[in-house]
Image (cartoon, rainbow, N blue to C red; front, top):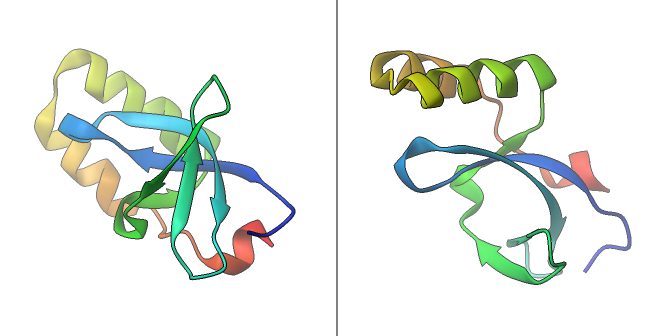
Length: 86
């Protein structure tokens, strides 16, 4: 694993946006960390660069249950690149 971790925007079950720490494993996969510092492997297709305003907009749409807005907002998310956490 790399020795630097950072926050990422995670597309969780039901399109719920989550702000979690993420690390790239040496094999190119991503691990995300919960509040208890346990990590799990996570599909890199659902891990994005963290942007505060986009996260706030996603949370608001998720809370409202606005599926159309969520789809449009997730379309703006930039996939996380390994360099973003190194």
